[in-house]
Image 1 (tube, one colour):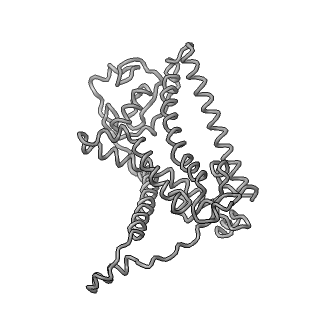
Image 2 (spheres, helix red, strand yellow):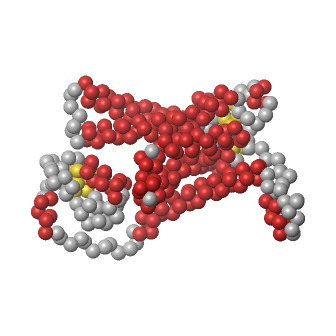
Image 3 (cartoon, helix red, strand yellow):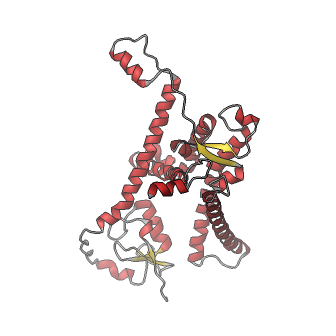
Length: 335
Protein backbone atom coordinates (compact mmCIF):
# COMPACT_ATOMS: atom_id res chain seq x y z
CA UNK A 1 0.00 0.00 0.00
CA UNK A 2 2.84 2.38 0.83
CA UNK A 3 4.53 1.60 -2.49
CA UNK A 4 1.28 2.33 -4.31
CA UNK A 5 0.91 5.65 -2.46
CA UNK A 6 4.49 6.57 -3.31
CA UNK A 7 3.77 6.02 -7.00
CA UNK A 8 0.72 8.28 -6.74
CA UNK A 9 2.98 11.16 -5.76
CA UNK A 10 4.81 11.02 -9.08
CA UNK A 11 3.70 12.61 -12.30
CA UNK A 12 3.58 10.79 -15.60
CA UNK A 13 7.02 12.15 -16.52
CA UNK A 14 8.65 10.32 -13.58
CA UNK A 15 9.47 13.39 -11.52
CA UNK A 16 10.65 12.94 -7.92
CA UNK A 17 8.09 12.02 -5.30
CA UNK A 18 6.87 14.45 -2.66
CA UNK A 19 8.66 12.34 -0.04
CA UNK A 20 12.01 13.12 -1.65
CA UNK A 21 11.15 16.81 -1.83
CA UNK A 22 10.08 17.12 1.80
CA UNK A 23 13.02 15.00 2.97
CA UNK A 24 15.59 17.20 1.28
CA UNK A 25 13.92 20.32 2.70
CA UNK A 26 14.04 18.81 6.19
CA UNK A 27 17.72 17.99 5.75
CA UNK A 28 18.48 21.54 4.66
CA UNK A 29 16.83 22.96 7.78
CA UNK A 30 18.72 20.55 10.07
CA UNK A 31 22.32 21.45 9.33
CA UNK A 32 22.39 25.01 10.72
CA UNK A 33 20.99 24.30 14.23
CA UNK A 34 23.19 21.20 14.48
CA UNK A 35 26.34 23.18 13.70
CA UNK A 36 25.20 25.88 16.13
CA UNK A 37 25.21 23.30 18.94
CA UNK A 38 28.77 22.34 18.00
CA UNK A 39 29.90 25.97 17.94
CA UNK A 40 28.25 26.65 21.31
CA UNK A 41 30.03 23.64 22.80
CA UNK A 42 33.42 24.73 21.46
CA UNK A 43 32.83 28.30 22.67
CA UNK A 44 32.02 26.98 26.15
CA UNK A 45 35.09 24.72 26.25
CA UNK A 46 37.48 27.31 24.81
CA UNK A 47 35.95 30.69 25.80
CA UNK A 48 39.19 32.65 25.34
CA UNK A 49 39.78 31.48 21.78
CA UNK A 50 36.34 30.69 20.35
CA UNK A 51 33.85 32.87 22.20
CA UNK A 52 33.68 35.15 19.15
CA UNK A 53 32.44 32.29 16.96
CA UNK A 54 29.16 32.11 18.88
CA UNK A 55 28.51 35.83 18.38
CA UNK A 56 29.30 35.68 14.67
CA UNK A 57 27.81 32.26 14.01
CA UNK A 58 25.25 33.50 11.48
CA UNK A 59 27.95 35.14 9.38
CA UNK A 60 30.28 32.13 9.65
CA UNK A 61 27.49 29.79 8.58
CA UNK A 62 26.60 32.16 5.73
CA UNK A 63 30.16 31.88 4.39
CA UNK A 64 30.27 28.09 4.80
CA UNK A 65 26.81 27.60 3.29
CA UNK A 66 27.68 29.83 0.35
CA UNK A 67 30.81 27.78 -0.43
CA UNK A 68 29.04 24.42 -0.12
CA UNK A 69 25.93 25.40 -2.07
CA UNK A 70 27.95 27.04 -4.84
CA UNK A 71 30.06 23.90 -5.19
CA UNK A 72 27.00 21.69 -5.53
CA UNK A 73 25.20 24.07 -7.89
CA UNK A 74 28.30 24.34 -10.07
CA UNK A 75 29.16 20.65 -10.29
CA UNK A 76 25.83 18.88 -9.71
CA UNK A 77 23.18 21.50 -10.65
CA UNK A 78 21.55 20.96 -7.25
CA UNK A 79 21.74 22.12 -3.66
CA UNK A 80 23.52 20.05 -1.03
CA UNK A 81 20.33 18.46 0.28
CA UNK A 82 18.93 17.87 -3.22
CA UNK A 83 22.12 16.13 -4.29
CA UNK A 84 22.01 13.98 -1.15
CA UNK A 85 18.63 12.58 -2.27
CA UNK A 86 19.71 12.12 -5.89
CA UNK A 87 17.90 15.15 -7.34
CA UNK A 88 19.00 17.71 -9.88
CA UNK A 89 17.62 21.11 -10.89
CA UNK A 90 16.46 21.62 -14.44
CA UNK A 91 14.86 24.62 -16.19
CA UNK A 92 11.19 24.17 -16.99
CA UNK A 93 11.87 25.60 -20.46
CA UNK A 94 15.37 24.32 -21.34
CA UNK A 95 17.53 26.32 -23.71
CA UNK A 96 20.73 25.71 -25.63
CA UNK A 97 22.89 26.98 -22.78
CA UNK A 98 21.69 24.27 -20.40
CA UNK A 99 21.77 21.59 -23.03
CA UNK A 100 25.47 22.22 -23.59
CA UNK A 101 26.38 20.60 -20.28
CA UNK A 102 25.15 19.56 -16.84
CA UNK A 103 25.62 23.02 -15.34
CA UNK A 104 22.75 25.44 -14.81
CA UNK A 105 22.69 28.70 -16.76
CA UNK A 106 24.75 31.36 -15.01
CA UNK A 107 21.78 33.57 -14.11
CA UNK A 108 19.76 30.66 -12.71
CA UNK A 109 22.83 29.50 -10.77
CA UNK A 110 23.23 32.92 -9.13
CA UNK A 111 19.51 33.20 -8.43
CA UNK A 112 19.48 29.71 -6.90
CA UNK A 113 22.40 30.65 -4.66
CA UNK A 114 20.52 33.75 -3.54
CA UNK A 115 17.40 31.74 -2.66
CA UNK A 116 19.41 29.03 -0.90
CA UNK A 117 21.81 31.24 1.08
CA UNK A 118 20.95 34.94 1.01
CA UNK A 119 17.22 34.88 1.70
CA UNK A 120 17.41 32.46 4.69
CA UNK A 121 20.13 34.63 6.24
CA UNK A 122 18.04 37.78 5.85
CA UNK A 123 14.96 35.99 7.21
CA UNK A 124 16.85 34.85 10.33
CA UNK A 125 18.02 38.40 10.99
CA UNK A 126 14.52 39.81 10.54
CA UNK A 127 13.09 37.09 12.83
CA UNK A 128 15.51 38.06 15.61
CA UNK A 129 14.61 41.74 15.32
CA UNK A 130 10.87 41.06 15.31
CA UNK A 131 11.23 38.63 18.22
CA UNK A 132 12.63 41.47 20.32
CA UNK A 133 9.77 43.73 19.25
CA UNK A 134 7.24 41.04 20.14
CA UNK A 135 8.73 40.72 23.62
CA UNK A 136 8.44 44.49 24.09
CA UNK A 137 4.85 44.34 22.82
CA UNK A 138 3.95 41.52 25.24
CA UNK A 139 5.50 43.45 28.12
CA UNK A 140 3.58 46.60 27.21
CA UNK A 141 6.69 48.65 26.44
CA UNK A 142 5.53 49.69 22.98
CA UNK A 143 3.60 52.92 23.35
CA UNK A 144 1.90 55.26 20.92
CA UNK A 145 4.93 57.00 19.46
CA UNK A 146 5.58 56.85 15.74
CA UNK A 147 8.49 54.44 16.20
CA UNK A 148 6.45 52.09 18.39
CA UNK A 149 3.52 52.19 16.00
CA UNK A 150 5.89 51.35 13.15
CA UNK A 151 7.16 48.35 15.13
CA UNK A 152 3.60 47.13 15.71
CA UNK A 153 2.78 47.56 12.02
CA UNK A 154 5.94 45.65 11.05
CA UNK A 155 4.96 42.78 13.34
CA UNK A 156 1.48 42.57 11.82
CA UNK A 157 2.80 42.87 8.27
CA UNK A 158 5.43 40.18 8.82
CA UNK A 159 2.88 37.83 10.36
CA UNK A 160 0.56 38.28 7.40
CA UNK A 161 3.40 37.81 4.90
CA UNK A 162 4.48 34.60 6.62
CA UNK A 163 0.92 33.29 6.48
CA UNK A 164 0.63 34.13 2.79
CA UNK A 165 4.00 32.51 2.11
CA UNK A 166 3.06 29.26 3.87
CA UNK A 167 -0.29 29.10 2.08
CA UNK A 168 1.45 29.68 -1.25
CA UNK A 169 3.85 26.82 -0.52
CA UNK A 170 0.93 24.50 0.20
CA UNK A 171 -0.82 25.57 -3.01
CA UNK A 172 2.32 24.94 -5.09
CA UNK A 173 2.82 21.54 -3.46
CA UNK A 174 -0.82 20.61 -4.10
CA UNK A 175 -0.44 21.62 -7.76
CA UNK A 176 2.70 19.49 -7.98
CA UNK A 177 0.89 16.49 -6.51
CA UNK A 178 -1.93 16.81 -9.03
CA UNK A 179 0.47 17.31 -11.95
CA UNK A 180 -0.62 20.91 -12.63
CA UNK A 181 2.79 22.39 -11.74
CA UNK A 182 6.25 21.01 -12.58
CA UNK A 183 7.83 22.77 -9.57
CA UNK A 184 7.38 21.23 -6.10
CA UNK A 185 8.36 24.36 -4.12
CA UNK A 186 7.58 28.04 -4.35
CA UNK A 187 11.23 29.08 -4.74
CA UNK A 188 11.75 26.70 -7.66
CA UNK A 189 8.57 27.94 -9.31
CA UNK A 190 9.75 31.55 -9.01
CA UNK A 191 13.08 30.58 -10.58
CA UNK A 192 11.42 28.61 -13.37
CA UNK A 193 13.08 25.36 -12.27
CA UNK A 194 11.94 21.85 -11.55
CA UNK A 195 13.51 18.80 -9.92
CA UNK A 196 14.45 15.60 -11.70
CA UNK A 197 16.25 12.43 -10.75
CA UNK A 198 19.98 12.93 -11.18
CA UNK A 199 21.62 10.90 -13.97
CA UNK A 200 24.12 8.24 -12.87
CA UNK A 201 27.66 9.52 -12.47
CA UNK A 202 30.38 8.34 -14.78
CA UNK A 203 32.70 5.84 -13.06
CA UNK A 204 36.16 7.11 -12.16
CA UNK A 205 39.20 5.35 -13.60
CA UNK A 206 40.74 5.39 -10.11
CA UNK A 207 39.06 4.36 -6.88
CA UNK A 208 39.92 4.10 -3.20
CA UNK A 209 39.77 0.31 -3.44
CA UNK A 210 42.41 0.31 -6.16
CA UNK A 211 44.57 2.70 -4.13
CA UNK A 212 44.56 0.56 -0.97
CA UNK A 213 44.97 -2.64 -2.98
CA UNK A 214 48.07 -1.32 -4.73
CA UNK A 215 49.52 -0.04 -1.46
CA UNK A 216 49.01 -3.40 0.25
CA UNK A 217 50.61 -5.24 -2.68
CA UNK A 218 53.56 -2.88 -2.72
CA UNK A 219 52.79 -1.46 -6.17
CA UNK A 220 53.37 2.16 -5.16
CA UNK A 221 53.86 3.36 -8.73
CA UNK A 222 50.33 2.23 -9.61
CA UNK A 223 48.74 3.80 -6.54
CA UNK A 224 47.00 6.96 -7.75
CA UNK A 225 45.21 9.51 -5.57
CA UNK A 226 43.20 11.82 -7.82
CA UNK A 227 41.50 15.09 -6.99
CA UNK A 228 38.15 13.60 -7.93
CA UNK A 229 38.67 10.86 -5.33
CA UNK A 230 39.32 13.47 -2.61
CA UNK A 231 36.25 15.46 -3.60
CA UNK A 232 34.05 12.37 -3.61
CA UNK A 233 35.39 11.37 -0.17
CA UNK A 234 34.63 14.83 1.27
CA UNK A 235 31.19 14.76 -0.32
CA UNK A 236 30.48 11.31 1.11
CA UNK A 237 31.64 12.44 4.56
CA UNK A 238 29.39 15.52 4.49
CA UNK A 239 26.37 13.54 3.31
CA UNK A 240 26.81 10.77 5.88
CA UNK A 241 27.40 13.40 8.57
CA UNK A 242 24.10 15.07 7.62
CA UNK A 243 22.37 11.70 7.95
CA UNK A 244 23.88 11.24 11.44
CA UNK A 245 22.63 14.71 12.41
CA UNK A 246 19.10 13.81 11.34
CA UNK A 247 19.33 10.56 13.29
CA UNK A 248 20.44 12.40 16.44
CA UNK A 249 17.63 14.94 16.11
CA UNK A 250 15.12 12.11 15.74
CA UNK A 251 16.57 10.42 18.82
CA UNK A 252 16.38 13.71 20.75
CA UNK A 253 12.73 14.12 19.80
CA UNK A 254 12.04 10.64 21.23
CA UNK A 255 13.77 11.42 24.54
CA UNK A 256 10.83 13.19 26.27
CA UNK A 257 8.50 10.32 25.40
CA UNK A 258 11.02 7.80 26.74
CA UNK A 259 11.50 9.76 29.95
CA UNK A 260 7.77 10.14 30.55
CA UNK A 261 7.61 6.59 31.94
CA UNK A 262 10.10 7.41 34.68
CA UNK A 263 8.75 8.24 38.18
CA UNK A 264 8.43 11.99 38.85
CA UNK A 265 11.31 13.50 40.81
CA UNK A 266 10.71 14.68 44.38
CA UNK A 267 9.55 18.30 44.75
CA UNK A 268 12.31 20.84 45.45
CA UNK A 269 12.89 21.76 49.05
CA UNK A 270 11.49 25.06 50.24
CA UNK A 271 13.98 27.90 50.58
CA UNK A 272 14.12 30.44 53.36
CA UNK A 273 14.22 33.44 51.02
CA UNK A 274 11.14 32.46 49.03
CA UNK A 275 9.07 35.15 50.73
CA UNK A 276 10.87 37.69 48.53
CA UNK A 277 9.39 36.04 45.44
CA UNK A 278 5.75 36.27 46.49
CA UNK A 279 3.94 37.59 43.38
CA UNK A 280 7.32 38.61 41.98
CA UNK A 281 9.88 37.29 39.51
CA UNK A 282 12.75 35.44 41.24
CA UNK A 283 15.23 36.98 38.76
CA UNK A 284 14.41 40.69 38.73
CA UNK A 285 12.43 40.66 42.04
CA UNK A 286 9.79 42.89 40.40
CA UNK A 287 6.13 42.29 39.65
CA UNK A 288 5.61 39.88 36.80
CA UNK A 289 5.64 41.26 33.27
CA UNK A 290 4.05 38.58 31.08
CA UNK A 291 4.00 35.90 33.83
CA UNK A 292 5.47 32.62 32.62
CA UNK A 293 5.84 29.37 34.55
CA UNK A 294 8.77 26.97 34.26
CA UNK A 295 7.15 23.51 34.67
CA UNK A 296 10.33 21.78 35.82
CA UNK A 297 10.33 23.82 39.06
CA UNK A 298 6.91 25.49 39.18
CA UNK A 299 8.24 29.02 39.70
CA UNK A 300 6.72 31.95 37.83
CA UNK A 301 9.00 34.45 36.10
CA UNK A 302 8.82 37.35 33.70
CA UNK A 303 8.93 35.93 30.20
CA UNK A 304 11.90 38.08 29.17
CA UNK A 305 13.89 37.25 32.32
CA UNK A 306 13.44 33.48 32.17
CA UNK A 307 13.82 33.17 28.38
CA UNK A 308 17.13 35.03 28.44
CA UNK A 309 18.35 32.98 31.39
CA UNK A 310 17.44 29.68 29.74
CA UNK A 311 19.15 30.64 26.49
CA UNK A 312 22.27 31.47 28.48
CA UNK A 313 22.44 28.67 31.06
CA UNK A 314 19.78 26.05 30.18
CA UNK A 315 18.66 25.53 33.79
CA UNK A 316 16.18 26.92 36.31
CA UNK A 317 17.72 29.90 38.16
CA UNK A 318 16.22 28.73 41.48
CA UNK A 319 16.52 24.93 41.53
CA UNK A 320 19.28 24.53 38.89
CA UNK A 321 17.25 21.78 37.23
CA UNK A 322 17.87 21.47 33.46
CA UNK A 323 15.23 23.19 31.35
CA UNK A 324 14.74 24.63 27.87
CA UNK A 325 12.91 27.61 26.45
CA UNK A 326 10.46 25.30 24.67
CA UNK A 327 8.99 24.16 28.00
CA UNK A 328 7.85 27.64 29.08
CA UNK A 329 4.12 28.10 29.64
CA UNK A 330 2.58 31.56 29.66
CA UNK A 331 0.04 32.37 32.37
CA UNK A 332 -2.92 34.68 31.86
CA UNK A 333 -3.55 36.20 35.28
CA UNK A 334 -5.67 39.13 36.37
CA UNK A 335 -2.98 41.11 38.17
